Length: 308
Image 1: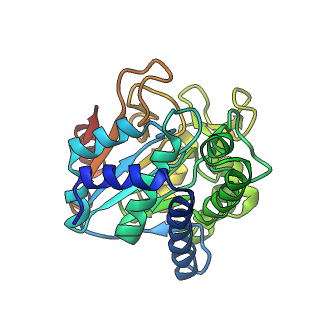
Image 2: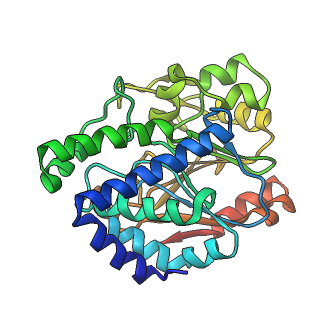
């Protein structure tokens, strides 16, 4: 099996060659589409393994910090031993090494299949929800020329559309990029109906933020999209799904932060762009989570956060 340095070497070779890079991205697309068919098109993944699970927040093209995280937590060993790595979205835009970042992640997906989970972030946008900045298409053109860059971005749009939006670990936690599908949460009581989001729910899942100053929910005027949701919504979500914790990304912070009395954990895995000194990740033993009550889980989760 490849070492981390092997991956670095392979990334350097691939990003220099348009045809090889495109072939790699198309491999990732084929895997994501195959997994989607296995889920019958559902946009959430149910994960019930008894293994280590790693959660990584927004990367935004910060390739070298991502490598540091992988090295510190022994991510490849976790994969080799049957564990999972869950990315919470926002792989591109802003950072200097966006192409290397997506090449590395695509290689991981190709090599490890469903052990690597790629959730969709708001910077993997549908056409009607474009973020700003969204400089990734221009990075592709800069690297490979106008025609090739545009063709590559059209492939990436299919990649983004194939990504799931939610990861659900029964009796443990739920993970997504921004926030819960509040409209569905209020309308339904069963897990499948709540989490099998439709396109009309994308804005809530990709753009929303938690707040300790809001009781229920309101429009997210700061972002101009999504919702600000309060602890009442979190409590309803946890109760209906039968879980203890929300893990999400989306908000810049110094590696991690908690909201709603530590029931919502935000991870941010890009360092420096927002003045943050640290990048964060979470490494949990999913079997151990089953043996703990809600109070013990929150304490265990806090101790399982890794910063670099």
